[in-house]
Image (cartoon, rainbow over all chains, first blue to last red; front, top):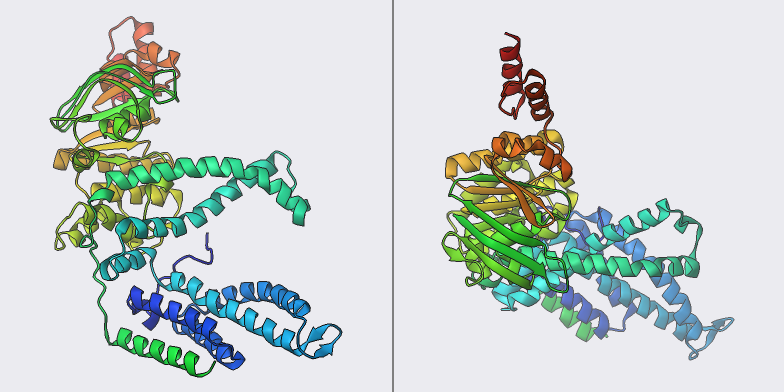
Length: 249
Length: 279
């Protein structure tokens, strides 16, 4: 069970950063990606994304996310290039502005999605929620909801696989169907998935309750999340990125 | 420690009561095994002792459950859970955090255990269940059995006075199952923790539990000292509870020889009895 959002333990510079700093860096990269229209700056941001992944020692995961995004990006690129009507034609119905626009959209998509996925690979969810509660005063209930939602994704996948296997054992040929047909075969499975998920969620709620969920306060967390020179440097880097995005539009 | 008087409980939107007229009295330091066929109300009884029934699962609740002097209906779930630790049947839904250490920290942090005491408690709990090497691991990378041990560790880290476990060996192999029961015995004997364990493996209960409660269709069929309950072998078999082969053997010998032979609950006893008869 190794999915794209699972935490990868490590002790890199990125791992040691305050979770709040990591989140800030993620948000700044996203903001910059939407502020600038400059293709080269976007490429620069992409390089930053990749660099973060490599520095954190999660190159494999980074490339996996990158490859996944490229597939969606390719589809989006074609669609965007075909639908833009402005500019001078380059060949057939595709224009130069269409290509540029499509490039921007696609790059933006990749630049924004990568750090969002990476931040979960290099931060324990509990550290993220604890730090949010501690420093940003996010109410614990909200932080818990977020953490649980992310934690449930692999569980749902596991459960879905279980249901599909059970169906396969009874002769449903999922492997022979493709596209829409496969979709229509999977759709009815949502009912059992939903029922078992709701039941499971309820159990988790009880489990949290009997272990003092309601007693938790901002001061409860055992780990403390301090800001170090590393975080200060990252803040500076964020400011530089932001300034860059404003200057190089 | 636990006083149950004439407890009946029917879940909301259900007609058939899950429990009917259960009475039970456990002293501090008792070790009770609960056994019975599926749907006998074992889990419901476990929930009633830990206050989850009627605080979380609503329904018609008659009679009374008192744990450590607290009436579970009048006390809040939080107050009960300071005293009673519960290990659920579905381990995956019990685990809240993504890593082993976080899972243990969760309860400790919430109940406000002192910062200086926390590392020792975590070390103690992981050491007791025998998984100190898994401390840093993510839950997703663990096997079912390892997860079960994490769930148990996260509860014993809180040092409850009463420990309720709902089929804690469901995902474990025979050796690990014995380990869990040996651990329960240690907790019971060293710290005087009252243990209530729902379990299907009768052999384990025979060996470790001092008292047995047999449930069927929400009613108590037999309750008492383990050996005494096992002497009602026919009743147990009628409701589909297997009894250990040594117990069957001693009964058969008793019938054959016409002598009064006490029920054997483990191999040693059976051997002694057999030798005694041959001499």
